[in-house]
Structures are given as C-alpha cells and as structure tokens.
Image (cartoon, rainbow, N blue to C red; front, top):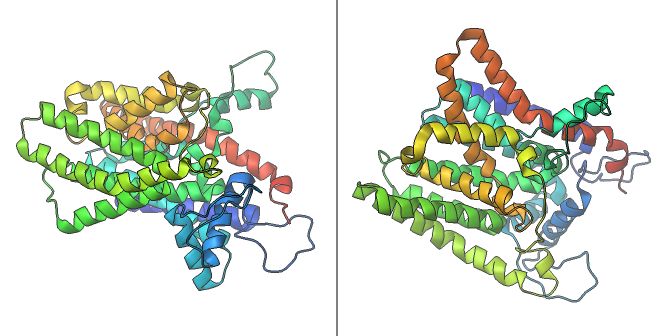
Length: 416
C-alpha cells in the first residue's frame, strides 16, 4: 500500500466516522433540551465506561488536576489520574464545549493515525502494497470468525448447521480498534499514541538510521504518554522490548546494534516506569483500585476472537524463521505478539486482556510477512481477490458488532 493509497484508506475511515457520529451517535450532549424521543448524546454504546472517562475530563474542564470518582458514595482521596483526561478537559475549557465532543473529535482522527503508523511499519520492514493493506486491516479488525455463527443464524439454518460458540469479536468493543473507533473513543485515542510509539521503535531498530537527540526526545515523550494513558499496555511494550534487547545482547554479533537497543530500552524504561509505578500506587488506594491498574481476570475464547490473525501471524513467523524473528527489526514485534499469545491463549482466565491491547498491530505485521511470501504463488486477479478476501475477513466481525450498535441506536443513544 503506497502512501497515496494509505491516505485514501485513512480518509475513507475518517468520512465513515464523521457520518456515524453525525447520524448515529451524535458528537456530544445537545446544548439545549431536545423534545425528540431519541437524543444523540455523543455515545452509541458502552455508556458505563465511556461516561466514567468523560467524568474525569469534565473535572479537568472545571479546573481540577486531582480527580474524584463520581460514581461512588464511598469517601476517597482525590488523585491525578490519566493525562489524556486532563488534556481533553483543558481543551474543552479553552473552547467552552463538552469534553465528550473533544474526545469524539480526537477519536475521529485516531484510527487514520493508526493506519498510517501500521503502514509505515510495514513499509519499513519491506512489505509490499497488498501485504501492507491486508496487514493493516488485520491490525484494526482482528480477524475473528464469530461472524460466521451470526451469518448462519441470520440465514435461518442455525439448528441444522451449528458452527460453535461466539467469541469476544462480537461483544468485546474496546479490544478491536475499528470497533473502538466508533464506540469507545478513549480506547482508540490511546491506541493512536501506542501506534505512533510502535512505529518509532521499529524505525529505531533499523541500524541504518541515526539515533538523533530529537528522535530520542520523541521516544521518551511518547513512552511517558502511553504509560500515563495506558499503563497496562506500557507494561507489555516495555517487557517486549526488554526481551528483544536481551536477545540482542546474547545473540547479536553487532555491538552497535546491541548498544542502540540498550539506549532505546533505557529511554523506554525511564519514561514508562514512573507512570506505571504511579498507577500501581493508585491501584492500591481505597476505591481507586477498581479504576486504576488492577482488573479482574476474564475468560474469553480468544482463539476464535483473533483466529485469522493467529493463523496468518503464525504462518509469517514460521516463514521468517527463528533467526530473523529474534534479530532486528522483527524482535520487538515478535516478542510482543508471542507475549500476547501466551497471555490470551495459555493463561486465559488468569490475566486481564487489557495487558495485550494493541498487540494486533505486531501480529498483523508478522501476518503481512506470510501474505507477502504468498504473492510468489499468486498473480493478477487471483492475488487481488485473495488480498481483498483477507481484508474482508479481518473486518467481518467488527462490521457485525458495529451493525448491532446501529440497529440498537433507538435504545442506546437515548440518554437524557
């Protein structure tokens, strides 16, 4: 996917988001009371979590830097919590608008930024246009296969043709980037920061690029923001790059590459550990522990939820081989994808999936390697058809989820 086609894809997503928010969810609370039976309040679904996020941004708009949890009657201390909510609230105060409106506007531009970042990583790693397009769709869609069960139910042959259980790809809104784009603005905004950080890390793993002071300052700034906004994800990213650095020190014969990775790892650790440790402290405070870093483990069928992604990512990893997986520039991505696989598939039910948010980008790029190799055996219309089919299957379950929200808009968007 060239830069032009990437821009077109991103623009298409942006237009769809604008249409969705204009006609389905709304952009924010109406300025005046509306007599209509359906009020477009700014959210199409996921009200409990979304309104919790907005409540902190509203406090920031009111001038606070230390926040309360408004959805409890239990006494607790005010604490600083998440720089994104502070930023959204400050912008809302400056513009005299609702924080939800600011968050929704940021969200509209977030997934296109994810698309640009994933495409940038794919190009940096030598993937062609078709593989980059398919990998980008897998990264934002997840490639779950629960859509097949829903299709069988819609066709009326569910009793004759059972197709197994439904996976989280039909109900776990915030894990799938393209669904979060329309339904969970905070999650997709935080994913955009993570995507840009990941692209910077991958480019720093190219030994032909100079480690400039400006680049390292950018890395530190993004690392601090991601850790403050998404401490769970920061733990995973830092662990993955730490593993990549350790492997480099053990196996790489190139001293400059190992030194480069040590420098990048030190920058990430220095910028990410303070916000993560602060989140750990917040999680230990009364009442706040339910809202900060700690969450209950959940059991979900993640094999179904990311089936196509696991299959193609595994194929790509196998084609790369162990030597290339553990060496630059795939070591960070492979460590991230492998760690997420262990947590979601082998420790399912013992960990909370928020630790793995964003891993679809890493595994999708590995899947892109497999798709790139497959191009050697396909030509012309067959290759185009295969690429389009993978892209469609990657996005099928999210499209079903979004459709469910659209069909239910009469009940989910009617909040006074």
